[in-house]
Image 1: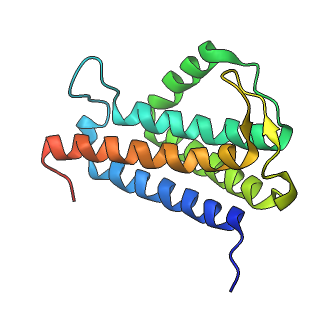
Image 2: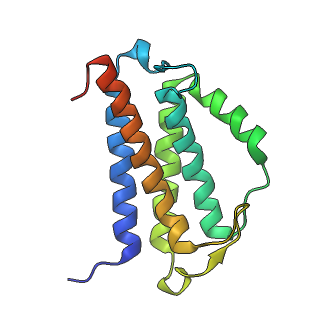
Length: 153
């Protein structure tokens, strides 16, 4: 059996999103917007980042162009969707599905095509695997908060 890299990354990305949502929902509702320190991010803010990033990464992969919306638009959207779990969950699921479909459509011939980023060019391969890494990273952070609260499963 031969595995296609794009399908492995797509499946891993979906799994990371599922696990991140599961970890978030394991937290008590009154602690989903809580952080252990004023400099630390809340779980809901971290999931909002993942929802937005998954959507913007799908566009980045398709168009090979960094979005012009900027950090202020990101901050505003993060704040807006962080105010409602149902809105955030819907966006995370929608953007993850779009991202996965986009990843699966990347031809092998484009995996090494560079995409210009503000901090330097990254290969398409690096870009398609980043949301998986990012959600896995935030899964660890959410689970750390759960461990502090004594609810880690």
